[in-house]
Image (cartoon, rainbow, N blue to C red; front, side):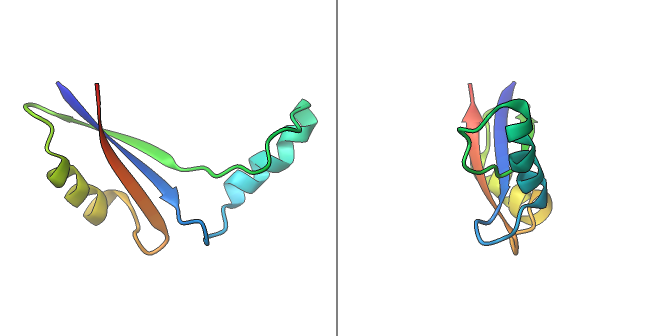
Length: 78
């Protein structure tokens, strides 16, 4: 089966409180090398035939991402 991965991230200008909470917790774990954290989501679509990237982009645009505050990338995963 062909798998298409959609990565959805908050746009850079949108505050990411979940990412900020992780960034704030890292020093308690002894991690000081990470400057910032942004958290998004990964969605996997499995097509029965050849992966249809245009269809996946349409799905992402209409259903998976809130394009007002989020951006997304679509790619085929081998």
